[in-house]
Length: 132
Image 1 (tube, helix red, strand yellow):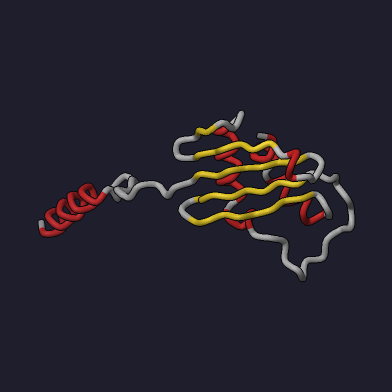
Image 2: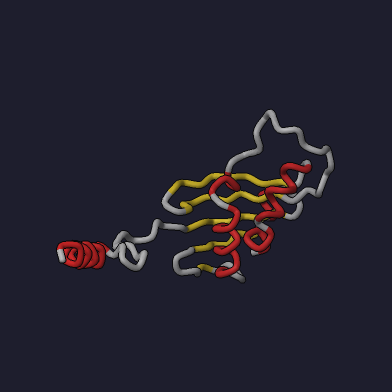
């Protein structure tokens, strides 16, 4: 049967490339972040944590949950709020955060605050990450 030979050849090729099980031979993209959080908004008062993912590590108190939270939030969480966004004018406190490093191989330099509803939403998406 010619189909059996073709199927066997395709299965062997897939196994060699790691695609038969969904596994990849490519290394996972680097994910290493420095997270500085100030409850007062003054960078001089900030506490800084280091987080690595894949595997989870660093000096973050809950690295595994923080990595999961970042994965769930997606890369867009690092993007600033659009200037055209309509945000509630609620002040959620003076806390600020600054995250720098590399996430999934892409550079990150993001700031967070609780200055309005849109910023509070971004902050809340990363509650575990920013809790350090």
